[in-house]
Length: 204
Image (cartoon, rainbow, N blue to C red; front, side):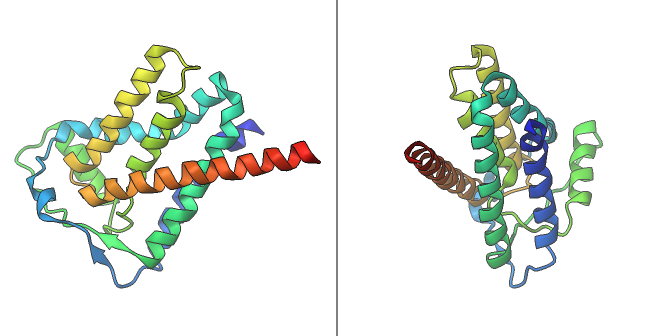
């Protein structure tokens, strides 16, 4: 049962992410001048890729060290998925991803591979990479039940992932800002739902 709380949310999110691309019309470009001033740093692709591993590793850490929070994390994750799906359908976005590659380093090749697989360029706002990373900071990085090493490691990697979305030109600044807003909304909404459930269970 606990495995479902770990595996189902990212699978569900991925399915919704793919399906919504077939319903998007009237796409908005959210690239601004500030995005063009952000340097391209190919080494940050490592953080971008590590995100996929953390989709499973992060909830597993929650399961191992703070099992009571696993259901709350899964609920918050699902709420994020629903809110993002709503945005992707009714406010579809894209960006200007005009990145030229001067060399053929392993990092550039990885970025090229990501670009090729992530076509067409849709579902940019908010950034799921940034949003999930913020959830990991909230549920692990700020949770004193974990060792200092784990908290620092997850926080540093999560911040690296957030920055990677900008440095490898996969997202615009506004996409990250949107992720912050959705994270705040879903965390608070999740707390309200859980508190209501606890109150109802206590009174019954």
